[in-house]
Length: 606
Ligand code: GLC
Image (cartoon, rainbow, N blue to C red; front, side, top):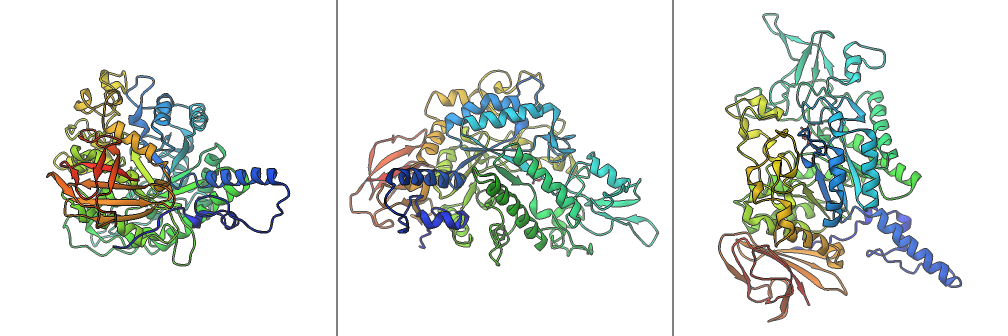
């Protein structure tokens, strides 16, 4: 099976810097400098190495997504807030988290829980104030945690001033949004301009009486799409980015980027034939509303903006990561288009979420991992997303027994590991939320019969800190979403005091500092239908081998053939699962490695 080199991402290292530094971030001889001033030279070398590290801070980070509404409520109103996050920063620092991404905290009527923004430069009142946000940035910085903000360019709230001005055709705002005239049917009845649907069900067009036109919304009708063919919109959003960069944030997660542009002629989309429901998003092929080539130009423009900013102001690289659910080849264009133009530092890799489930076997896992590495343009940084606020939680997708093994996989793959808050303790979806308590717009849109099929509420319930009221999340009578009833036995406090998903997770975060983890060559092998293994190998240091039994039977596997290990070579356990009979430091035979059902092990090769 093919070997994939996945170490330092040279593509994103300044050409000048890479001439002086080798792959390992260590300075090489340039041969042009005099040897006179040795002390100064050593000093400079150190500085350059530091600077190099600082520039590349993101390439092997453990990124933790905070969903602010559900993380920690500091003032007892049932809704998480910025002071709550500040309270819990020491916990994240202690866990070894290097960067956090905050889902939107901007002013919003909360129709789509913050993804509908009324003011991109202000804070939502329930979450706190700009002062709180500044305090959060300062505190995070003090604790060595980088801050990534959610940047939501595709749409605003319908209560945004820009939209009001656009409705009124105010000077400069007439074309800020996607407006179109009605079509008339044969009876003279007003119809939307074409057959496009919203991702969240129903027509993507809503009539605005005042303006006398339809406006486009790829999500809820309270989220009108901005018109990125209008240079004034581009300018306004650039300014938003600069505003946050000036506040000291380290980068952006760009929301729903592949929805930015639509066909200028507003042509009907072809039907898929998958459903007769013309309001379903499945009804048409989204050839005119998703992944248009203009999206890439816009992304490249934003990449230049953050790169220029970093260049001008110095300090750590300001980075961009993108959210787009699309086919693999399209996703790879988000790293770099065929003409070599850089886009995101990395586009989120959702394949472990969308392409694997509890029925997947060892071959599926290895295939998914290899696929990303094969398609990724050379020299870029891979990334692996285990969960987020839009998808079923990891413990629910793969089953609670696989949580430790899944974390072993996530954390020993090359590149960036992304964790959604709560996954580190194996939180599960709360699938029993009633229709009355359901708040997620796509769930409300499809109605009482079908809401459970699409609702994202189950994965967004409050963080389970301890056994106190509302799992320690809030002192309110009723939090905004019901806490999962399993919090009495599934919570952080308990997991901190015993072998647990959390203790395994924390050991893995620590393990990521090993040279083999940071820059080791990567190889993945299928041992049998239930067991697969990864090897991370680096010259001059110990190799690390991750072995995972995804199946329900105990297995003993022989690793000597696949990784060319010596006969009867011993492996030393570095991390074992919370229920494992093995523990750190145990020696195990490489030719008959015993694995319990669903067991994962991370071992070192002496
Ligand atoms: C992204 C967000 C999702 C939101 C949507 C519309 O997909 O992750 O939560 O509903 O964009 O902004």
